[in-house]
Image (cartoon, rainbow, N blue to C red; front, side):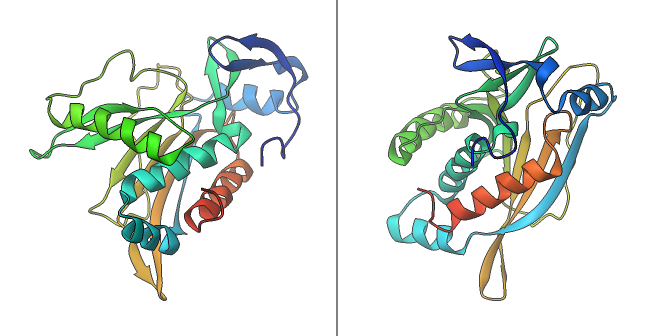
Length: 228
């Protein structure tokens, strides 16, 4: 699905696997300028996606359902151009690879921020993720550091106790932020299907509802076994 919405013009190849968009020749330059001036440029959508196949597959293969759907979310992010864009010092960059800065719960019901790095191979992704999560589970505090503040991530949280219908986030409005925030809730049964609540919070200067639709469509395909 990459490149379906438009063919962006790039003016810089970056060694950190990112390219700078040529905003002057971008067909969304006015949209970007308009929404970037807003005190709150983010908008959100919450919906339910079918996870029936994914859950059954994880049970059969003894996979972590959490890590499976997180991997599919990252796959869908990278197949959706707009969801990879980040604003840095007034410039817009397209990152080739997007990782996750996730919240990981501990036995004492606190959580810590946990960088989880993307790997295309699911087994390699799981290995790295388990090492990272074990480190957070055996620590204390928020564990926020420079690694957590990277731009080439999504801010991700799982809320496995609640099948939510909407979600908001704590925000510091004087901090220029463009990182998508994605949360997943407790799955539930509906007409013989298992449905997974997903909340998507994105910068409107970069991502419109159509781009969210592209992301959701790709995520649904991944959760149904079409992308592995």
